[in-house]
Amino acid sequence: MRLVFLGPPGVGKGTQAQLLCKKYSIPQISTGDMFRAAIKEQTELGKKADAILKAGKLVDDSITLGLIKDRLQKSDCKNGYLLDGFPRTIPQAEGFGALLKELHQELDGVISIFVDEAVLIRRLSGRRSCPKCGKIFHLESNPPKKKDHCDSCGEKLIFRNDDKPETIHKRMETYRTLTEPLISYYKKKNLLFEIDGDQLIEKVFEDIVGVLKK
Ligand code: AMP
Image 1 (cartoon, rainbow, N blue to C red):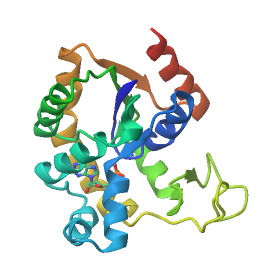
Image 2 (image 1 turned 90 degrees about the vertical axis):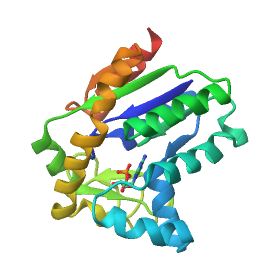
Image 3 (image 1 turned 90 degrees about the horizontal axis):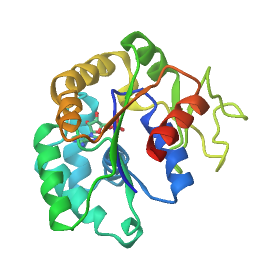
């Protein structure tokens, strides 16, 4: 199964991606996580990406495509993968299309999750994530069992640098102008499944699994 997750920041892509990847035994490939890891390790890429993420802008298309090209050729992608946060622009989608051809692969579907912007802002400000295993929590709707600590690995949870109100607005704007056009791009290719993300986590998951079965 090869899937793409599309949706604005805070819509629940990461949470749903983790559940789906477990169900279908495929890796979750999050370009955002890859950039955050590079920033943490202070690699050359990390040094470039740091200011871009803090400003709520997008990393250069060719850098992002290069990362994905290497990642999709790793052995764990043999039976498929779920792309969470990629592609994010039309040039990335076109580059990805060419890469799929080169690898003799086809995409099974693009899941687009939608939610009202006011709900997204509330969700992002309550989001906490584990810097070690990537598990995502929310202070109100999905709190950790032990305050501020990850249920899975016990690590202290963090508030993402780019979930601050100033950056959230810029990320929303970036999404609307650069990423939203991908919805009609994939609709035209008959690959799009639209899912209402303003429901309980379990119900959103059920809806996604339902459309994939069809
Ligand atoms: P995310 O964790 O998916 O919300 O991504 C966090 C940040 O990483 C984004 O706001 C961008 O700055 C950067 N980023 C993630 N994925 C991409 C991508 N496909 N293209 C460009 N920048 C990206």
